[in-house]
Amino acid sequence: MKIYWQHKRRGQELILDALNGQIASLGAVRETKRGFDAFATTTGYDPGRATKGLVSMEEAKAFVESFEPWNLYEGGMEALPIEPEVRPRETD
Image (cartoon, rainbow, N blue to C red; front, side, top):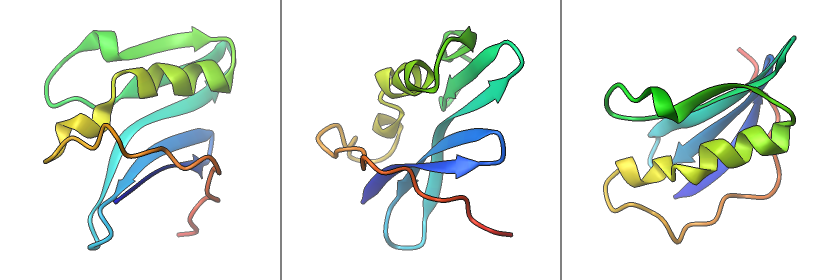
């Protein structure tokens, strides 16, 4: 399994790649006129897992990672490191 950030049109998305063809979004950050918006994936409604107006991309990514959204998936990979390099945007 791998966890990594991937560039998206207006930000980045945290991806869980199970290496068997299954890919899941764990959260995302996007740049807006007022700063950065961030959200961490959850199984239900939890408004505390989203925020707006953060100052930097790094702060927004730390917000998403602080919820350890990968623990929603079988086995909870808390020991699995997030790859340091941001992957390029996939072309459609």
